[in-house]
Image 1 (cartoon, rainbow, N blue to C red):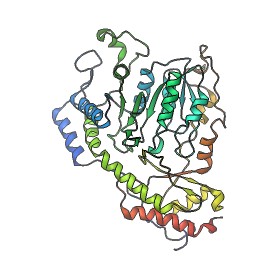
Image 2: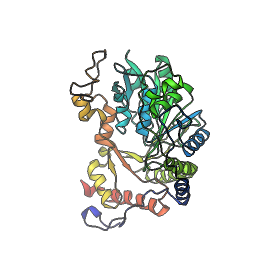
Image 3: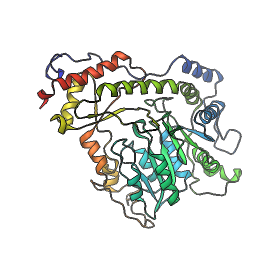
Image 4: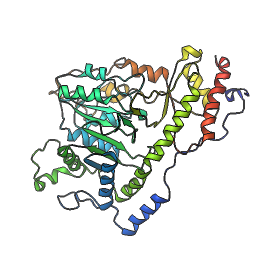
Length: 424
């Protein structure tokens, strides 16, 4: 092949990879039907027939329940709202600890802070990047009340073992499946494996409606608490006859009719969109396996991966080339790779300075908190090794990529390896 683009050669790709676009005529027609009806939202923050929202919101919820085989699906305006509502529905509060992942979007951890709880960061599995059951067990204290598990990059966490741990200690488990809609674990959908599961409909997810989220559960009480928190609980509970007032401070987490109409059409496309991701990832893994220093995404037995990103591990010791230099060479070929994913959450200023609400540092300084938590660098060594040394990821699996695009990805990797000695 020609010399590396990093050194002035012609890149493998002279144009960017196609962007992910899933909105089509079906969604346009659905939106126009809402506009023709003229009802863009039908929620009222009172105990009334409109407490549960308009017809398209309810249609989406029933369709989601049927697709994922769950008793309840509660729509919200974002997955962040869904995480917040799920923590509230779990009944936790100041003085409690919630075990969370350090390697995910920040909202998966800050949902605990919304209710005055202390996030405790367990470490991740080095192969799936999901929370390690062993590390979860080591983090449990008398203050622990819940666990928020993340199906990161689309691979479900080891939920059988995690749920067993939770049952031993009477803990609520919330599964953040924002990146894993349609992924499966032992023939059950990710997001349906815990007490509550949260899905994202944010614009860059597998299916989306711009912004939006869904929380699913098979527990009738949790479902009703989710709906109350979504829609101004504090002014609804009396007329509805609710007696458990814990965390019944409500919000406006409501989804609009336009978002629901789009999401309903997107849900119909989920299987096809996910199948494309799996096929693309399988092709890349076949082609890249065997390259020195590259470990393609692991797929555990009885798992269907969702491939939100194609995440690989890179071993610089095998190539003699730093991860940064390797990624720069591939990016110069027109195939950008991300270094690490997100900085371990506990290294952010909020946790390092222990300032969340008010100038006095609540909830970290709450007198009723009897635990002791560390946010020092080094508490999650696997996470830190993945982020700072090994993990690379690319948006190489989505449905708008054609076979030629995937072949360019492979050609880019092989070209860099052909010239690997020049990168030292």
